[in-house]
Image 1 (cartoon, helix red, strand yellow):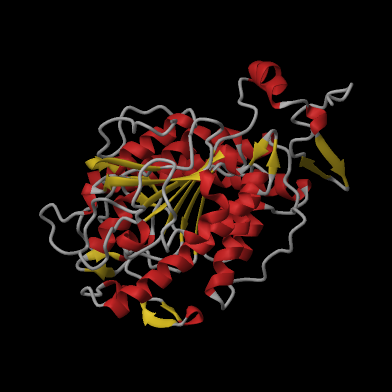
Image 2: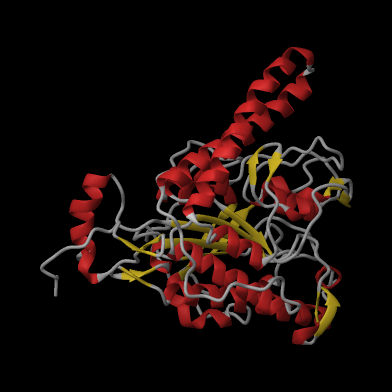
Length: 450
């Protein structure tokens, strides 16, 4: 029954100096009413369409991942079995290729290229020095265009610390193996692995007066830095001018974040115990990060997230599931049945954590659906078979309804060599970020909406 008095979708709870945005309530009217009235007048959709990209390293045992049948009648394979409770909420996409993860004349280094090109679709420059170069990643294209709608433009997290310098893979900088998000071709974004830090970033309980004073001081410092740096331009070479321009871009980004934060209602901590730090147990670490993604999306603190479950080329052992062997070592299985079985166990462990996140998002009501219905969660790897280091026919899963723009519960096969970035281009369109090209994309991916 529709209540006699409507509440605004932007209603806030106020008390003790804080204000908290409400989730969707029946008193706010049915989804259709919001769509046709409030959304039209506000120029917004009734519920935000979120984007998350989850990455697993070293490829996947494709025989244990790929369903035999196409369409809605596919059966869950051993690795996909943990996702049984949300089978109707995801698609398996086969045939997609990350061409720029291939050598293309650059020799070995498939692990570094796999992660660096996964969301960019660009060939990373082979260097272990400071002259790194890849391309802007799909998450940052979305973050740039959606930045004015949330407190944080994007969230970059992971469960394995990675170096942002040094050599890690056949002459490639370590940054390529650990960073998935790239703000520009030369600006990788480091991920945060400490759940406590992520929680504080999402739900700072700083009083308004403290925050305002801090931001005023920060802005005055930024103004001084910008003015003081102008005299340097004529004294620098082209490379330093580029670096200084990137620095200015970062300064301007901080300025815009300060201005945006002042206009948004303060965020208060949810009914969730703040993490104490990085858990010793990897499974618990993954679950904590999944909880934080769900909280961030539910509270609309951000609508864009990248989550690296483990760095590309990771040789982490999985003793808790009876596989103490290094993951990367096992991925070079040489078709040894015992090693392949252990890889399958690791792959299944990862999909168990994906299932945890999807079930959590699907348990949060929002309008006539759930947060998962109003999200697009991509999961996969830039390697296919870790033993062969091939980058075609990648293991890719897409979950969520995309606010009604995606049809789920299917196995979709695409023609050989279909660029992975065609998928990313299609997701961007569904969050109202229309770009003509991203990396090596050749067009939109068909068949996603049924």
